[in-house]
Length: 322
Image (cartoon, rainbow, N blue to C red; front, side, top):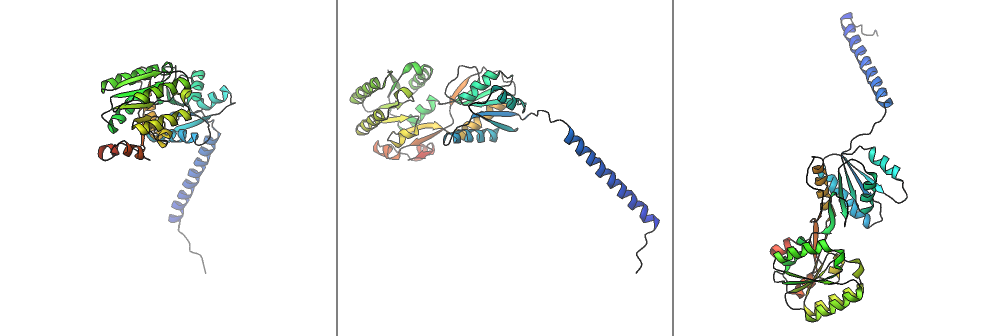
C-alpha cells in the first residue's frame, strides 16, 4: 500500500510549526539554565520568628503561638529555633538570609539574642514575663483588669481582695491592680512578705478573720510557691466558703474557683497583627502590653459549693469547667 503523499501547500505550514516549537523549547532550556546558574540572593520573607527549642509539653506553647502568627500575618513567616551552644554568627546568618521586614522574638532567650545582634529591623516581643528593653510586644502575664472582671462576673458582691506576695517583685502590676480594683469598688489589700514562713503566717491571719465578700488572689510568685501552703489555704478557704482565684490552672484542679491563663493561639494572632502594624511606621512609643488573650477555667464543684451559678452570660464567658 502506498503512503499518502502531502502536497507542498501542507508541507510548508507544518515545517513552520515544527521549527517554531523547536525554537520555543530551545529558548526555555536556555532560560532554565540561566536561572539555575544565577546566584541565590537573600529574599524578603516578611517575618522571622525566633523561639526557644524546648521539650514537650512546653514546645506546644510556641507551636500554638507561631500557628496564630501565621494566621494573621499576611506574608511568609520563617521560624528559627534558638538552641544552646550555637554561635551569634550562626543566628545572624540565619536571620539575614531571609532579609526580614520584622522580627518576632518569643521567650526571654530569643529576645536577648536579637537585642545583642543589634539588627536594624522592627522588633516585636512575645511570651516573656518582663523586659527592660524598649520594644513593642505582649507580655505572658495576664492583664489584671481581665482577672478582676472575671472575678466580678462570677461574684459581683466581692468587696475586699487579699493578696499575699513579695511586693518588690510586682510593683507596677500591683499598682495597676489597685487602681483598677478601686475603680470597681474593690479594696485590694496587699500583704507584703518575702518568705514562705511569712506568707503562711499572713494566710493564717487572713483566714482567721476573713468575712463574706472577701476573696484571696493567688498571684504568681516563685519564692512563695509552696505546695503544702497552697493546700492549707485552699482547704481552709473551702471550709469558710471563701473565693480563691489564680493565674495557674493547676490551682483550679486543687479547688480554687477560677484561673486565667494564656490562650497561646490567640496570643499568636495578636502578635501577627502587631508585627504587621510595626511595618507601617507606627510612631507609638515602644511598650509591652499585658496579656488579654486568655482562657478562663472554673472549678464547677467549687462554684456550686459557693452558691455561684454558671448559667447564661456567665457560662458564655467561661472556656473550661472542671
